[in-house]
Image 1: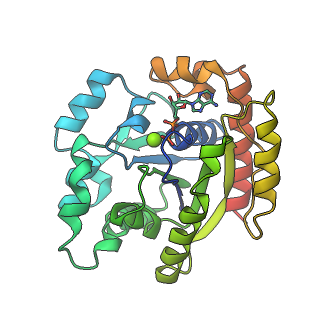
Image 2: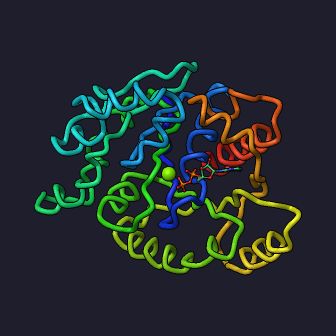
Length: 263
Ligand SMILES: Nc1ncnc2c1ncn2[C@@H]1O[C@H](COP(=O)(O)OP(=O)(O)O)[C@@H](O)[C@H]1O
Ligand SMILES: [Mg+2]
């Protein structure tokens, strides 16, 4: 039976490419024949919007078949899975109500491990090769839940001065979580929205390479307008425009993620 690997995408900085990377790595893994479950952990619904129209996403968000209701009632996520238009690729959609999830979970027993319990049956079934979780741009109790449910974390970082600012806080937080779940490991940092014409890109890579013990993925993602057009069409760029530069970069990244997570 396959061993399911759970990977989350976190960075408290908004706009760092978490949702774009989660959706495209997931879709590229599915194209490579891996069975993938995506979990939208953010009230902004961006991961859900990568695969479904606004109307469909809002309908799912307003129904009781989404992550918020599953977590609140501590239900098995199996019953909350929807199929995307692509083979091997399923999703648990989110809800705008996720904004209050921290408050709702506060009084619960072992509150950091609720999402992990919701995913237990799916993981044990071995049905999926990978579960990818998209996190919101925060560092609180809900992100703690996402990290405690994961084997690995990937940190997307935007190649910009403000993208780099606050990274130390992010890694301090990850260290706190690792004290609770020592099995959790940082799979690596992926640089996104890189603009090769800017000198700052080179500086970003140099600064990141000085961070000892943190792997920086060889594949990085350059700025590409095809990404925004794909999101406008509710599709990941690896499906929307297969020949685009960012589609190729995301396919390479997915291969690197698969090989690092399978070691
Ligand atoms: N490589 C890229 N090229 C151009 N735009 C990008 C790229 N990656 C992400 N974006 C855009 O940047 C914005 C933030 O990306 P997103 O994935 O939503 O970040 P996060 O989930 O960390 O907030 C989105 O509008 C997205 O379309
Ligand atoms: Mg996002």
